[in-house]
Image (cartoon, rainbow, N blue to C red; front, side, top):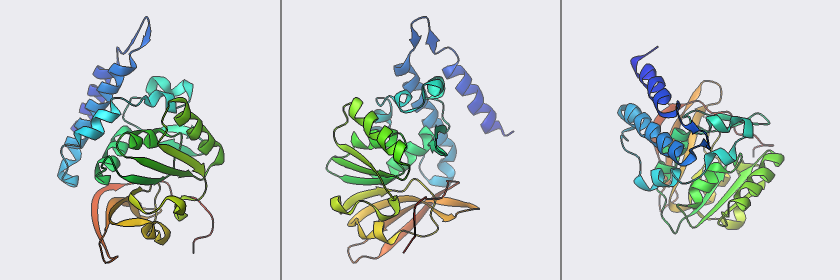
Length: 246
């Protein structure tokens, strides 16, 4: 085990070991500790990503959004650890670091309209909704799409909208988008999503082999419709699910 891995385990134990008291978990404190872990992870991967400090706006939002309310109740004690969590139906909630990094790379402004695939339980949509004007999210697993919509409504997130469908084809009714986040692996940039991206817009996606790993990649659409790609970090995501690709 590397020294970095050991350091992260020790830091996690120190931060989360005594978080629950007689009155129950201190979720606000746990969120602060989670963000500290995210910042450590960013510093560790900074040599690869070139990003040693994440956007203060993104980190501030992640200190606010109650991640524990987006996971099954049995997993709430683990909601603020920096690792993925299972949601059922073969789907996972991404680790806080991945959520933070992808959101940072999207470079969101308060007036932006955002599309994401892989809604899951709605946590990332809730984060995005605090940074942008409107968020439209598509989840291929219908029960999860319903759960995400219910979670967002229950928490009063009125500018994030979730529905079931194949995220490969986007949500054309609300295009064009300033930013698009693809939360599953693809071996090519989906043309329907690229067509729904504004000139000057950013698409963040895990791009590469569906079996052997991908690179988290930022695709920028130029004014003439051409694109520029920047590889950020090696990652391993599950493939984007859906129907026939045309």
